[in-house]
Image 1: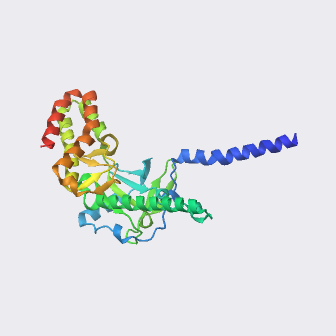
Image 2: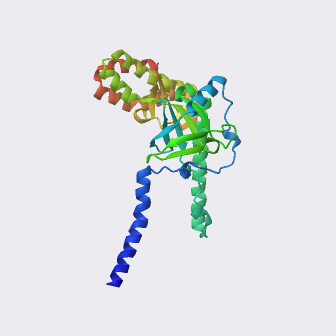
Image 3: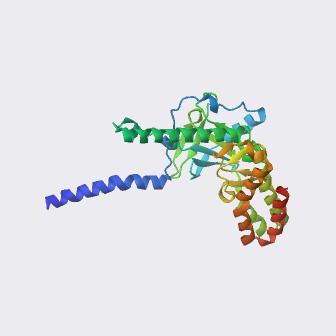
Length: 297
């Protein structure tokens, strides 16, 4: 009986050790302050330009209020401002960190190559993602709504932002030591068009379609490719202006300025959007096709 009790306790302990971390991650949606913390040194290539006076004023306005957890994407945790006008996105640092265990274990030559490859992939991702966040602020601000990209440790912000996590716990985080972007909050494209159509605002819905095409065209004209261009999940509207919500996948590509490449990119990106319009709001399809034809001229 004693043996049975001991075995049962061991099983319960093992079960708890496995399930408790899983339960905690589910409850917090994997967010912790450690998950967004980094001790990465300063990288000159990710230094961003000085803010204008108007940009400084808006950033101060954005960061002078508390934020509440909204959700997570593949790259970041998103928090919405109290006034509903801004979103702060803190990057998931585990995507860039080399594995401590992998780097400290004595490995055979075969696994040593695996470790080098894995570390290179994380460094490459860091460089690609941070380059895109810088581009979003400095060169595609109108197309992304990003008002600030903080990609290096600094000392000038001197701001502790109050963020409330999924469990309702408030954390006062020191922004000088975190990587993040501040972006104007947008309504997703499909939600906006649905809402306009439900309200009978057909002409405004048509203008929204034109706005999406204009946003894609403007990004291409500036010589950038978007490696994650999903209109349904990654694009939205700030007022009447279409923007790209997910800004971590821009790549410099001068070929995008050529008509052939630009048109092919536009057709590929908008194909699912066209199908959705045809199935959900067929009354908009003639206007959609007219807008598409004009964009491809």
